[in-house]
Length: 144
Image 1 (spheres, helix red, strand yellow):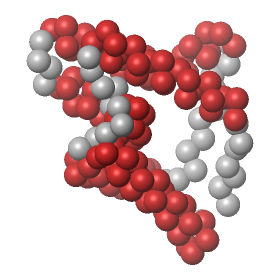
Image 2: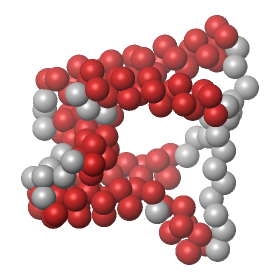
Image 3: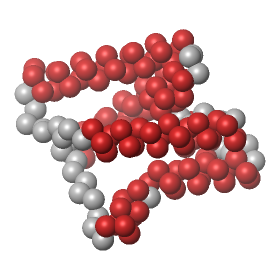
């Protein structure tokens, strides 16, 4: 059984930081901080400055463990409770969903809902319902 850790302060802190970052990106660059859109635009940037902000944002997203290591002297424990094939299949499913949904949880759930976008409210409701159904099936029907 996969144990779910309850981390309200870490979760709140991360949410506040994501909110501040997305607000600043919208304020100063007029861009939405949807992770998949940022990544996709990195491969087809509109200009050199477009590439620069996307690369800086993505570098910041993946450098968290190194920052924890520098501050604490220890790498954070990263536990992946599923197999590599499950990760690949999950990634492909997410990629299809992002394509059909015209965005990801950060684009719709954080930025779109903050802009009161009806499409983002629907997309976020679908994300949450899908997550609820998936967790229920995996944990209670299949028994993983």
